Image (cartoon, rainbow, N blue to C red; front, top):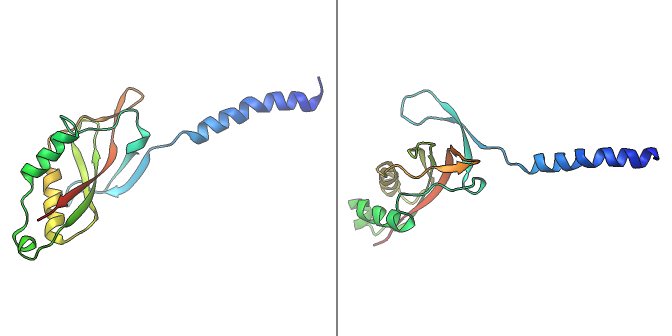
Amino acid sequence: MPKTLLRSILLLPLMAGAAVFSAAQPPRHIANVSSRAGSAPVCVDVYEYDCVDIQPQFPGGDGAMVRFINKERRYPTQAYHEGIEGRVLCGFVVNEDGSLSHISVIRSVEKSLDREAVRIISNMPKWDAGVLSDTFVPVYYILPIPFRL
């Protein structure tokens, strides 16, 4: 067997293996995030929403989440009187046990609306956790909270 053919045969499985490993996505790393005011920073490995086998879900599904948000939302008085509307875009981690942590505002509308959006998410019940390879994993989730008059 010629050397070049033998070399090609031996390199083919190595190249295929390298392609598989390079396509695998490692967890998204959120560094130096503190889940409670005054606590020490914590580094958490978190998967992106579309990188898990089963995405985290609010108990009862999206319809139940919309009902919860509408029931829980209290329009801040000053923002109401000033006619301020918009969508506050929030990000948070759905942990392995379904609890929510690392809640933050990604796109702000106005400070009082931002605080209300964070309060709503903080009061949510535990979610159904995300699953990757039959294991519960923390997943980063982005949720818009609408404020309309």
